[in-house]
Length: 324
Ligand code: PGA
Image 1 (cartoon, rainbow, N blue to C red):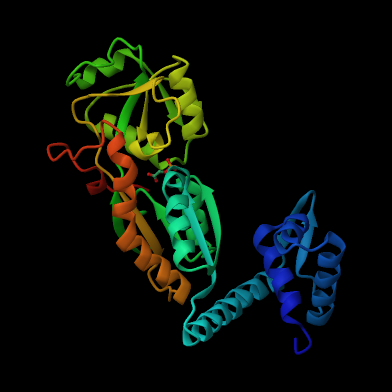
Image 2: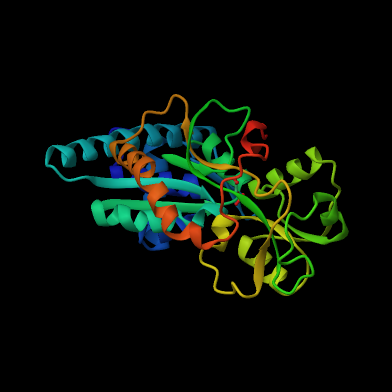
């Protein structure tokens, strides 16, 4: 391995992580033949194949998996060193990998805007996906920090809450329940509901809440994103439970409305997580500090526009219940 270059390792790490030569080439801004040549040279140096193709899928061989783990350690150390140097020079620079649940995309980019203003030298790779996939990335140690609505029960993580995440019931503005005060929960069982896809944290929290309250909802349709749900609610296809954050950028605010339902909003929090034994890079630590100090103020700038964003001291805290 003495003759392997850092460039070859970078190329291999991207292919191994993305399980695709094309996507690795895209991420590294290289051509596909360049990437393939680097990979070939590296496996010649190792003397064993690193990847194997079965059908259309790429798999890591045992040597490949070991090398991918080694690359993880090398690049983490190098990133720490780069940060240390830029810290010594008085500037913060480096790369931050973040994985956030789809519902967090309503505030994380705003926060990143301010973060970039303060630390222009920091680059961010942001992965936005649902809870199930964020947890998978956490298990694979794919990123520096993870943002989701509830820490997992069976993983050894450090989790801290940093912001409220109330879940509300939304309906089309001309719905008969719109404008009514303190709608009784059982009344919702008469309505059709739209729900997020399996793996969604919002869906899981809403299901748990209704189950706890003994309410059986009529689910008419499953949709893969908060935006799709909002459009379907506006189109009169049913009601839905969504995070109040998803309404913050609401352009169709005259089309959907938040219902005043007993026991709502469901009180949740946003959590930032990392594996319990993970040592954060200086960039990740800088972002974590930023999240702690800036997110409340940032959310205050847009959440008050949402009528249902109010503290609800008398409803059970959904975060007290564990989620898988
Ligand atoms: P979701 O996540 O986007 O997967 O619904 C929200 C959450 O974890 O609360």
